[in-house]
Length: 377
Image: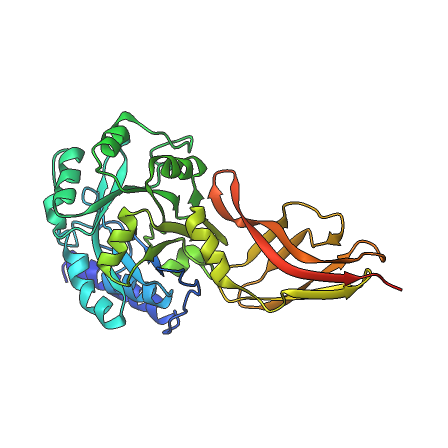
């Protein structure tokens, strides 16, 4: 048996063993739609054996389906192919191999590639392309132009990756100014794998670039994340199609969900919170300093962590509330004094500590209750 056939056979066998060790069912990610948009769960950065990944394209697709994703892009490197002595070079192969299975599973497969260059400008993903082989160019400018000429969108990968920035500090170079001013870049990874880049988040907000977060997965997903979720890009699209996702990214309708936190603009995070949380109790009737309970249900897969943004001299509200995912809970409120006599509408402001709207900012939400307290006799 020649070495190439042996190597390919070994890859198939390893993928098979890993696959059968994983459950053959889909776990939905419960994050609600918001008014006017569908909330789609996406990963736009992943690898297979056609560059430096360890799995076959169909394995990557089944994995994404099991993880509850709506869309995935396989973005194998153009310039870096450590398996090229064993795997034929065809930069379209992963997409061609995976597209039928993706369609069968109802998963949106987006064709992409990673343009792998030294910093600056670093690594850039091109997605929504039609021919990855056309991205084989002498210079990074030519490669990006080839992607954009196909209707592709280009985003900057892991700006603070220590493989190119040894100190882990993200830096904006003249080359990125060129990309930005010529409208050749659509977004930046604010989260890559397990790394979060606060400065990059601010760049996206200041420059109106799409906020992206992806796994950059090379191994089987459970090898790197275990029972934890991979980082995903939440895309607020008008419909569940490839075209809808592309339009949303162009319009910066994105956020990032990772490690229990969501990073994004207030205009998306506020309705996301409101659609996730339902208050069964909005009217509070109490006597003196007795305790009244507020009943609330969290219909999402997000644990919301609320910190009181201010205090009230008459009514005591909890300093901290954790609304656990998929549960109904009660939290207490009460008057501070037995002789309290109040009958009015309260709008209590909480900061949602794990909904991040800027490098040093959290979403603030008003919770409204009709409170009636009569004095204790």
